[in-house]
Length: 152
Ligand code: HEC
Image 1: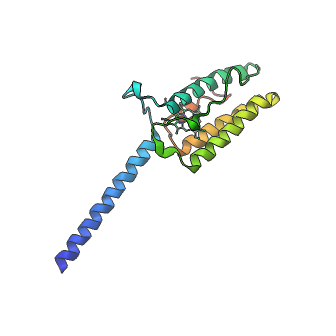
Image 2: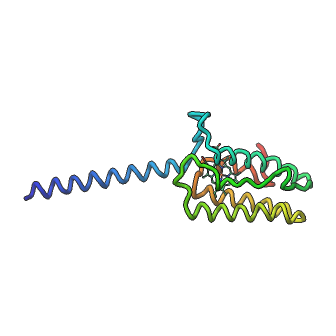
Image 3: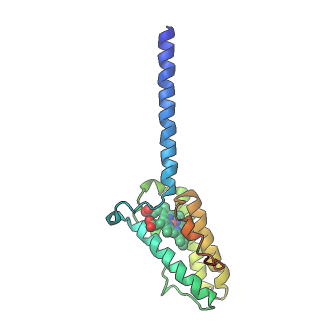
């Protein structure tokens, strides 16, 4: 009887430790640090759109700082939430809620052209917000997008 109990405890411990490693794996994935570097041909459409958006923001930042107006013809809204992601487990309610916040902020930036400084700042805040939950790797890049970012 003692042996049965002992081996039972051992099995439970094994299962528990397995579950633990699983959860560390997921949080590493959530980092999504340079996820495409290994195989450049495997870049998913969502990742491509994200790269484009980051480039757009780089350019918009400089223009807005020069007092120029940006519009949705030069910088159209990217519907990245309908594109295939590298990791499909991101496609959950919180992700889509964050995407809606981004979409609203982006539309406001293009519509309310008198307040583009404030509106651009609000867009970048929604990038940071979503990336704090999903894919924290690119935050380093996103940290360079605010209007007052100075290169060292
Ligand atoms: C609703 C959530 C969400 C929002 C909002 C969001 N992102 Fe992302 N971002 C992701 C996810 C998820 C990925 C991983 C995509 C993939 O690998 O398919 C990603 C990937 C990236 C990447 C890495 C792409 C690569 O090279 O693999 C960059 C850079 C990036 N985002 C920048 C931005 C910028 C800039 C903004 C705001 C203009 C933004 N993101 C807004 C969720 C979001």
